Image 1 (cartoon, rainbow, N blue to C red):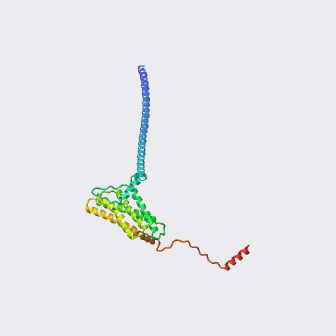
Image 2 (image 1 turned 60 degrees about the horizontal axis):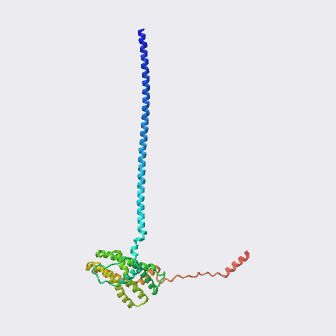
Image 3 (image 1 turned 120 degrees about the vertical axis):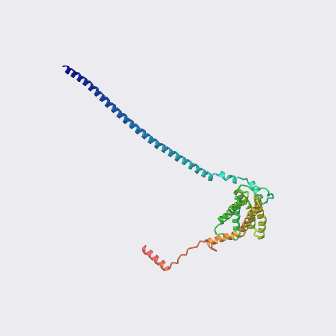
Length: 316
């Protein structure tokens, strides 16, 4: 019995221990399940963090790209507006044409009076209104001379040729003299050279206007020496006052005087012949003017007319 009792006790003990072991197993299973859930949640959180980091990098790159594109657009817009304002803003040219008529008249008179003081640089007007008007005046005088002379004009007044000749001389000679003045170390700017040479054309306008209406070669030579010579001496004196060195003065002033006086001779004697030569080259010599010519109607024989009339009568 004791053995049985002990056996019963042992069974009870066994039952107790077996119950505790089942409880432990349940707790372990529950704990493992919780750990698995925690790991799964941790992995999901890590995945979400990685996705967030990826999306954050992608958004940052997109934002940087938009900022760079916006900055490039603003830079291009500023450059375009700056270039447009450079060519469209009239204030850039306003200082060169802001002059009173009284000042233009005084400068026209001064262009015929040579200066005596050449020890210090003479003042040159930095405006282009007066020279530009003188160039257009010279164009009009050339066209007037072509009409009053015996020049045969077959295509209007050839204003393009006159404009090309006058503006070509003004701009071309001014550029050449500015380059030569730079080599000779003369103190003059391009605008001042344009103004000086432009006002120097005032003598040419007077000489050509008088000699185109009064056709005497002796009168032309007198005006060429006096009026053209005075305007040339004025320009030479101004250049001498702004140039250092006898050799430099001789080269610069001699070149300007020769070009200016020869251009007046060319306009009086050779310009019309050159224009006629251009016309003959383009159209052929002695081409008659355009006329309307009546078309020749062929003569129809009486037999054809009679046959046609009889055919129409039979038809009717």
